[in-house]
Image 1 (tube, rainbow, N blue to C red):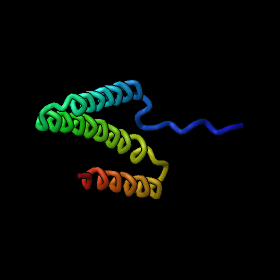
Image 2 (image 1 turned 120 degrees about the vertical axis):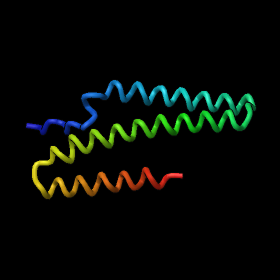
Image 3 (image 1 turned 90 degrees about the vertical axis):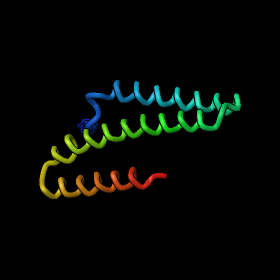
Image 4 (image 1 turned 60 degrees about the vertical axis):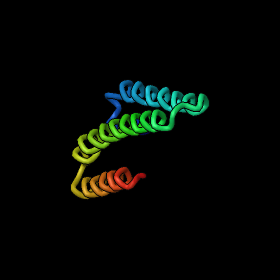
Length: 98
């Protein structure tokens, strides 16, 4: 008998997550159009900032869900420690961007 697929921390909010990501995708396409239309640099930068903020919000939601589902729901202390280390590495990567 095959094992059931792993449940991710975001499974319950997957539709909402996908909706947000599609909105970000649309924003990026909008920025592409702004560049094609040779819009003012500051306007393009403002839109880039908005996309980064939207992605940060998605990332924070995923981190929160990971902490609550994967870290807190780990079966034992060893697994919790491993998942906590994994979480902190992800936070570190997010903070170092730019």
